[in-house]
Image 1 (cartoon, rainbow, N blue to C red):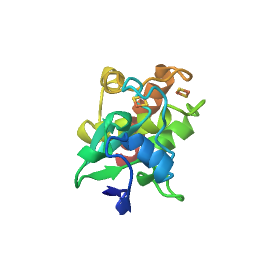
Image 2: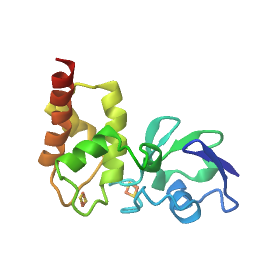
Image 3: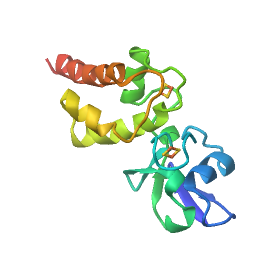
Length: 155
Ligand code: FES
Ligand code: FES
């Protein structure tokens, strides 16, 4: 079957029940999406299916049809990080890093719908993403700083 990932059509010959996450990581070598719980609890495997965040460990590839998949590799280039990735790096919030691809995917999507969230909004947006290392306060601090930077840039 054909699967469009990050703007490129790829071919998968295996079982249509295979989770998208396994196809991305094991067949297409797109290992940015992380396999942590494998059961839809942690958010580390989050990708976009037609622009909507989904947990790829729960998505059999056979049901995707002609959708467009975007992974963390599709959000940035070698030369330029996505703005959420950049602020995470600036705030040095990444520890083991297993949760961060999913966090970046979730927050990037969320900030498009709410570019000036309150602290509680960011916390709420991250309820499906579990981090066991950094703690959420620093992550939220980093996201909140993006708004200050935007305001300073606009002045
Ligand atoms: S690996 Fe998919 S939600 Fe945890
Ligand atoms: S940095 Fe390790 S789980 Fe979040």
